[in-house]
Image 1: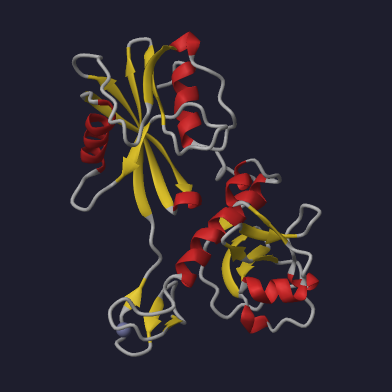
Image 2 (image 1 turned 90 degrees about the vertical axis):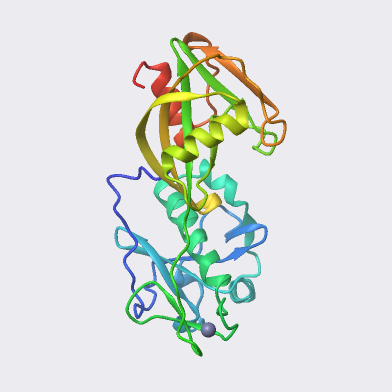
Length: 275
Ligand SMILES: [Zn+2]
């Protein structure tokens, strides 16, 4: 999965006062994606001579390389040749540790960008000196980073696995699994039962947690489950989120486009009789 970057070590410790070092990666995000050099790499602080260190916000680190964000207009003024890489392309970008670092940076940078003003009183916010939080300069309201929990469930019945197709997925992703966001007031198990009923009209039992994945592209934490079909196997798709769902025999499951996702991890586990 994209977040499996060992032996590299990911760190999200809050480094409020750390100025950028020359080799640190600078990530600036536009609506089109993350700005990078025309030849494939990302900019380092040493590429941006003349930029004031206080213009950069420390986000995360991998090993001894930190990732900072800055205003994309600043980076474009210093490096007008910069081009945008769509974030979805990070799923297959190499090296993988850098792809995961930039994706994670995009989640945090989005949070900083969309919380510049207080949601309670609309005054400007400023970073906390103590922890990853933005504090209102007027009323003191504290805003912490936001993560949207979601579940993905591999529904199986004997030798068959249920695969789904969502029309908004990129063309490279032919098949997926039932998935959805956790709503307020739900336990994860409640979300699994609700999403399975809503999307494919089935009931499930014997839920088992498998593993999780941070998924910055939807600013989510994905939690993967397996579940056994409980009752009739007739699929009734919702026609809204899904346009197709089908049972596949274990040996007929189609090849998967890449290994970055929790969905693929769950499908592969079923194929290999490990669910
Ligand atoms: Zn306020």
